[in-house]
Image (cartoon, rainbow over all chains, first blue to last red; front, side, top):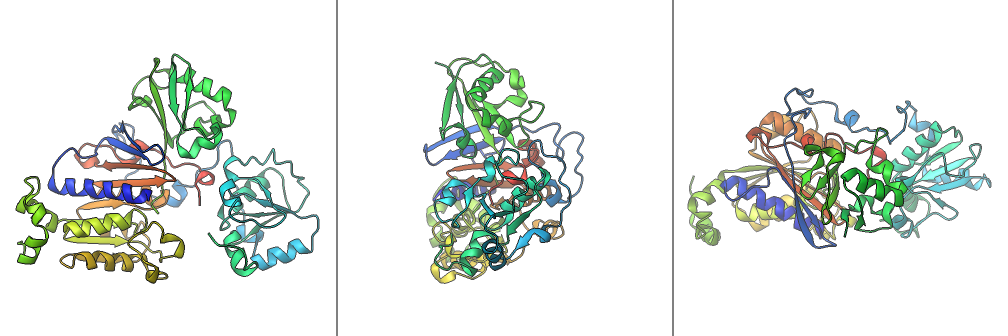
Length: 190
Length: 92
Length: 187
């Protein structure tokens, strides 16, 4: 329901802009919290040092936004280029590889609330939000199989582990979402 | 009475799922020091290596951004509210 | 531009509000709003903009309606599963008000199509779901000198504001100069 409330405020502001009426939400950020059921407002100022609209802009045309948004985790070194495909296994390959490898370690990097919906048997939960490759307690020599919801977050964890010296890593391509489709038809998709 | 720091959804997991935490201090920095002493995991999520508030997080003292006051040195009084507002991108 | 009799009747409760009136309703009819995102925010936004008579609504999205969307993306119904969201939302808007024009763009917003699209509209509404698109929209709105009505949500919290550097206001980069690290963004 949250998007309903927020989308309607957006609609209201658009009509006010068209009618040039009332006090538009320019220079003000409206914060809505459905759980507390309150609205707060904070001031948004024009930043004279803004890279786009500031006094000495560095962004003077459209840029590469994928690169701009590829910000590394705090403290992480510049990401080395790795060939993701080398680590990806389809759900079926992932299952077969684990079945043939009794010492395999299965790691789920989703958040607790997702773990509560469904999980793969034998997995250990290490949410990416608090993931620290140096304190996992995992053996760097162990074969580690990672998964998340659709395979993107577990690849990020995989890269972190690789940087921390782990070498035997595999990622579930398509995540538990595809696993439910291709391996375990009793598992719900969310 | 102290200073209330409001915690956004995205960071609640680091403070035992509380919406707000009341702390003591005479400046924003002291208030945050006090908060991060109790909840150490929060610190790297709020500040970079140089102790600067991370670029995707804004800190408001009452209703204005501390960037436009004295930053972390901005003085606070009992009853003030510090609001942490991270950038969120959801639309779905 | 004029309103026909059906429109006068339809919008009569607007026409009798001094803040809107005939002149205001015609302004609404002449306006062109481009919405990015036809999902959670886009559903109510598009339905209301259409109902109140915004003359031209553009919809940009490249996703299709999924079963897991239905509990909150209220413009889409169970029968719409698998359809492009822009088509489903367009049909819902036009069912509510056939007097307006809805132009659909079943595509991802990119660096090479954004400026051309923005040039055809007066106001941009951001209901997208990722940082790359949000910064692209912000920069393109700035270069196009169009106001950007921005909304974003996370769990139980929402943020809404208008970026309008063309009238002296701040832009998205003034508010947040950088996105969070990719690893911290929920996928």
